Image (cartoon, rainbow, N blue to C red; front, side, top):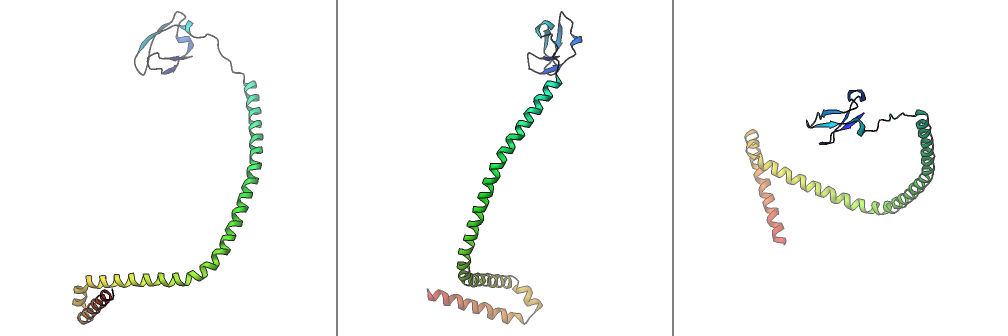
Length: 165
């Protein structure tokens, strides 16, 4: 039998034989609330589970659900196949259209990409050489003149570009 605490609504499973017909005091294990429980409050009928009826109901419901699922899947598969076919057609059309544009654009965009990479790499090399100028000169004394000339050339290029604007 299941008894519910009136204070915290916690439910307890208690053996029916532990409570006499006249009732008894019970204490909740969660909130320690004490109350009087009378057996006459509960319905004394013992519920019996009829397994045959339940199993038959479950089997029929399962069959109905399977039938419904199969019916739903067939139209869904047809619609999915149609959608996939349309997508494939659109993609093939797009590929045909873009391949002609890409061939002409690739040459110009490749050159521009390589130019940008070259300029960034060159700038990084200059920054690295400027940062490590003193240790490099200590290891290779002949580099001092080369680095000085490189930095003077870069300064001249910078002034030339400024004069153009």
